[in-house]
Image (cartoon, rainbow over all chains, first blue to last red; front, side):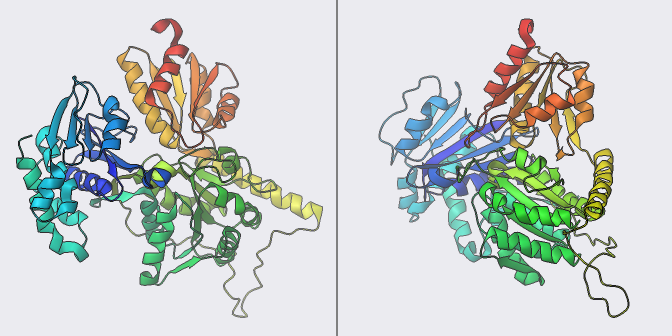
Length: 178
Length: 353
């Protein structure tokens, strides 16, 4: 199975970091994968995005132009990429920040108030992890088992105290019924 | 095999260089290769190596020239505009027959261009770049694993043939992360009797120089160098073929363009079109043999490039224009889509649709 994921949002929402966490989890599961960030002018002011491909076969082009799953962390990202999602694909919407509904009718949509859920648990910056949890739930691309080991690889020793909170946010997103 | 880690391509080059025994790095920051220099800045002081951010690219390449003369492994890295600045030094290093590694993580050009990925320095890398008759061994990675593996290989080949090698990557390869299994640290033990390391009053002076005022002497030096280039062409040409056995359409692409093309070849196969891919891993020496062989079997070639069409000339030369060669390209920092390549494959396949 191959899952092509596009995560998009404002710079600072942890879009690249969420992609990195998902990529590392894939690595721990022995999957083939690629992670490609937007860089340069796209990062400043506009939308930051990150392409992650998880597959059982070697990854060809690392560029995701028609995602199976889109994680939209803000309105400009949904506006920009809604049309690109594969028919039958999935869009995860942070409904705290995006008020409108998805117009497409040929995709599965999960609305979850990720920013609010994260704020309620005292960590408003972890909306990205909440979204990641929901992604694990709906995509089947990676599993929850062994999540902590993978997260340990991504979260540097300097921030080790944040490990537990990140894992908790992922579990929160995983458990949310959108 | 070593444990796989996730790394950016730029970081994989840096770590692989250190493991290949390169303890001297000189550079000047430029997007999209900056992570390479940053990695070196962090690591080199911890392992007794030298990281030096020079005042310019020109200074950096001349520092490389200096260390190369002592026989130590040395490298510099930059992106397109910065590599243009280095050309004088590269010509001197080639003229002095010294091994060194130059990394170019290409961005769109000409001029300051853009900071997005490109392959438009193909001519510069393979056809000279600097002045005079010389070549670089030019390796073109198409995965993060190859960013590491070809870095180690580049140092070995540079030492073996006493010539500078270039790793020609692009912004995507530099920025993307993939699982990579890093090579074990290697101790290189190539004998370098020409190195300037002090005579200890026991041998004649070694002189590192690219100036020959006697024309006959310069001609002989150039002829001898070209004998070595022949050996490189005979022994070190590298490429990968994918589904070429029964291919009727041969796509030729390297680096990121090869990744995109592979998707298109797979899609074409699903439609019943017999497409295949020839992926040059060295672009100098250029893999002429597989292209010449394919020219007798396929209906057409397609050169896929992130430029206005540069490698296409080598494809035409190698195939002796026996079959039509078309171009699929985007430039300015844009990457062709698999669909764009697939359309070209369909067109070349003609009635097969």
